[in-house]
Length: 326
Image (cartoon, rainbow, N blue to C red; front, side, top):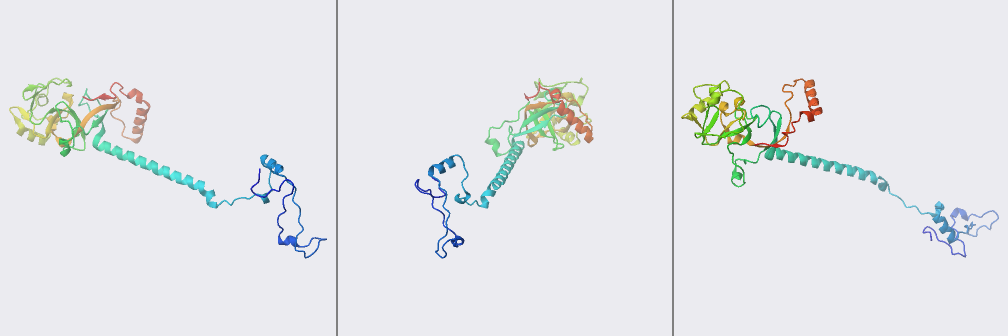
């Protein structure tokens, strides 16, 4: 094995001595002055076999005979720079993924699906207080040119819909469509008639006897109801013909399934088509109405939240979770 750092003498001769420096050219004691040569010290005899053996066993080689390459400072700092660059790239990538998720979520909530909670008993037993719904916002279209191109559904009698409350559009209501544009509607002893024919309503729930003429024999223009909106009263009197309410174009008459305890079209009027948000798809979670009046204080709300989280399995109505809405 040959060493790349210095020449190796053949087996029969020693390695040549290194050249002397100018200071070494001074005459040594007892030497001949002015001969221009230095008194050299012969190098030790090291054979090729000895060098190979020293190399194999990891023996130290004199530092003067080992060439050490220069290491630039930039090469030493490179690992730290790569770590910083990698962290920055990961951070940027994470932010991009987060922003993409937020944009998709906003798009989905705005145009496709939105979650709602049922706060009242007006749709019992179809929907209960504590039901959480996913509402399909695309099923009826956007009331534009695309409605003639895309296979959107038409609003049908019996559909459960979510809409902006006409009296206060900031609120969202959920009711069932009973009357369509052009229908002639009336109620006789709580029974709905459309164009003189009784409507089959297996979903309806009655909890009180017949004791409210305006509610049970609608429309009644000779009787006022406590919850009746004044504007609706004036409009209704103009639309009642032969005891039947004529539903105008572009509007729908809606009522709750809990017919005796529902604030619906009987009291505030029609739902314009542009107010309709969509149709509930599924109850994705349902929780028992265990505390209707939580404390308004911060401590009360924190206790309410902590109790709900720690008792989620006991509060969840598992038989209603993931149930389709009809």
